[in-house]
Image (cartoon, rainbow, N blue to C red; front, side, top):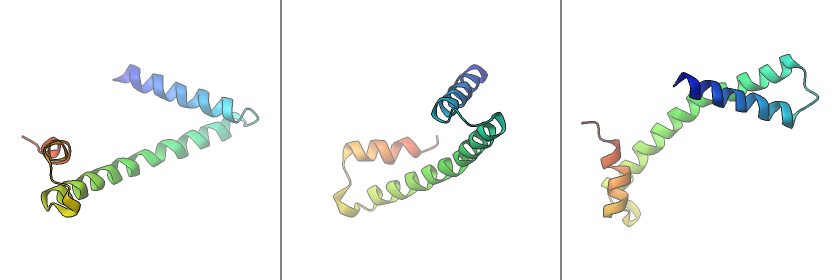
Length: 80
């Protein structure tokens, strides 16, 4: 897991440096920090989205109930 974290962190730094070659080191780090700081909020929004889609499928709103949507949005969110 640590190797993957280092790999993606390095890729993000490389991308920012290539996209903004005139930025100094501190500015690059601030940009990276801002981008990484968004991740927890995106994860939270993802969980909220999953919960809403599960409710929509269970209530069959918009005729969403089907085997595939049920498997994706309902069965995959259950903790056993």
